[in-house]
Length: 107
Image 1 (cartoon, rainbow, N blue to C red):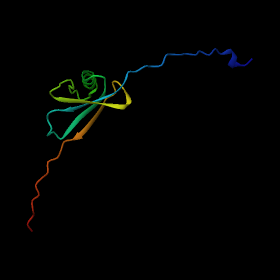
Image 2 (image 1 turned 180 degrees about the horizontal axis):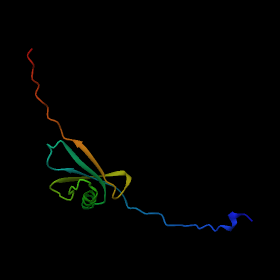
Image 3 (image 1 turned 135 degrees about the vertical axis):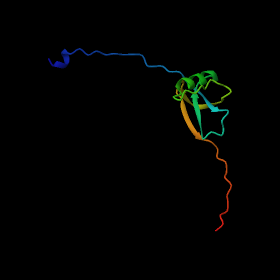
Image 4 (image 1 turned 180 degrees about the vertical axis):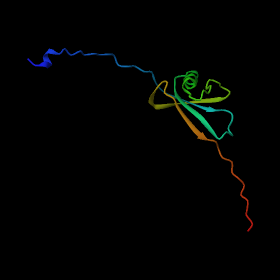
């Protein structure tokens, strides 16, 4: 008789973790302050705009209130891929640059 036969093997089974998924992505963008040096955009998988705003507000390390509809505009798209509800991507984008006038140098 070997030691392997004497050791009871405990088999632990647990149900798979279930997460909500959606194919709707919400893009939240600043509605004002377009002249800032950079802008933060949130991309949030969620079923509704209110849910997307609440998730972004909870996840934002800078503490922005994404629920403010006057400060942040929202638009959504349906994608063929499914994403986990609650995953948030924050992306910084540079503000548009204004062309500088060229001065001619006299030598």
